[in-house]
Image (cartoon, helix red, strand yellow):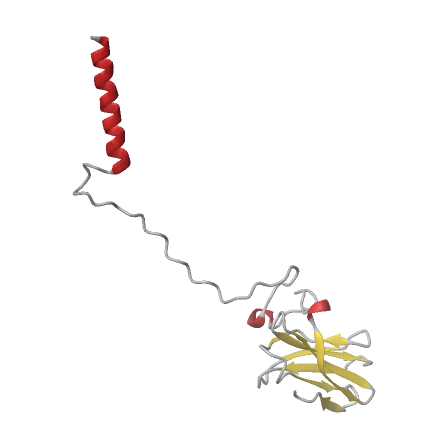
Length: 162
């Protein structure tokens, strides 16, 4: 009797396993396929190198050194001399931003950066040293970025636009 009961239980287990594994006996033989999640829209923001904290519009009004846009990520793309003062357009392709730097200056000299036809720009003023730089403006390319200086002496001048 024990052998018969054990055989019946074993047969029931084998049948149950077969039904679960093959899906036989389910709802009209249809199988449900789990839907894969729809891909999320990718961000259009570029992946920035370590230490770089902004890109494009997010850089506007920010300090280029604090945001990591200087150093190896910047180049001087245009320069001019106004009197004995040097003004430069500094551009970071990595940050898609430009700023102006003024050196050999005196307290009260100002430098302004504009880019892409923008007229508002950003201004930096020499307050205690002989140099200063502006906050950044968004610039998808260096072309169109321009730095202008107004010296304490009243003299003015700008870098050529590339």
